[in-house]
Image 1 (tube, rainbow, N blue to C red):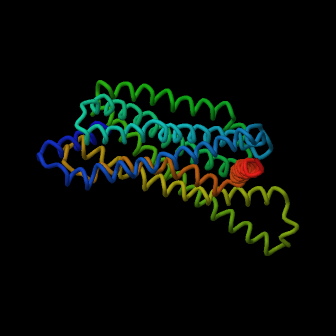
Image 2 (spheres, rainbow, N blue to C red):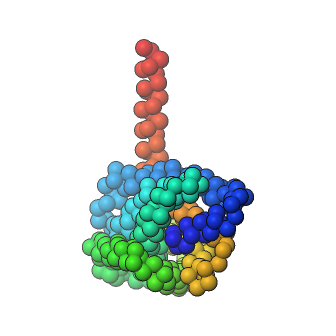
Image 3 (spheres, rainbow, N blue to C red):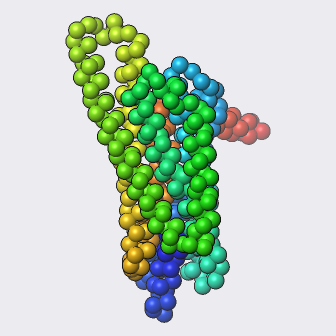
Length: 321
C-alpha cells in the first residue's frame, strides 16, 4: 500500500506541471495529520508499557490470570509504538521529499511498505488474539488456565512478529502479491474478531440474566466470590467491544483501498488518507486500554503524578535559587 500511495502522489504531481492544488488538498494536510499522530502514538504506548513494567502484579501469575492477556497487550503496545517511531515519520518524510522534488522518496517508499506490512499486521493480529483470549476466558473459565498460559501467549506473539517479518521482506520483490496476502489476513482477522465478539456478547447476555435472577433471589451482599469474579469478567468483556469497533473502522477501509488499488490502480486522492486512518488505531489503542483497564490506568496516573511532582519540585528549587 505504501508504494501505491506514493505512486498516486507522483501521478498527481506529474499529471500537471502546476501541482499546487494536489499538494494543498492531499499531501500537505495528510502529512500534518501524520505528524500530529506521532507524539500521541508514542506517548500513549510508552505510558502503557511503563505502567506494566512498574506494576509487578501485572507481570506475575496471580489468581485472576492476567499475565497472558498482558503479554498480548505489551506486544500490541510495542507494535503500535514502532508505528509512531518509524512508520509515521517515514510517511511524513516521503511527503516532504516529494514536495521538495527530491528523488530520495523512492527508497523511503519501499521502506514504508516493509514497515507497514510488519507493524500494522502485527497490531491487527494481536488485537484479534486478544479477542480470542477474552472469549476463551469467558467460555471456558474453568479450563482457561490450562488453555492459555504465559508461554503460549508468548509463542503466539512471537509467531505474529516472525510471520510478518517474512511477509514484509517478501514485499520488496512481490509487492502486489504480498499486498493481496495482507488483504486476506486483514479480512481473516476482522472475520475472526466479529465471530468472537458476537460470541462474547451472547455469553455476557446469558450471564447477566443469570446474575439478575440470583440477585432477585438473594441479597447482593451474599453473592459469593465466584459470582463477583464472573461479574467483573463480563464487565471487562463488554468493554472490549469498543476495541472491536475502532479496529473495524480503522482497518476495513484500508483493506478495501489496498484491494481496489491492486486490482484497478485508480487515481483516488482519498486513498492517501486510508493509511492515516489505519495509523490512528495505533494512537487510539493505548488510551482505550488506559481508560478501560483499572490497573493500567492506576499505573499511568501514578507515573504522571510522579513526573508532575518532580517537575514542581524542580521549579521550586529553581525559584529558591
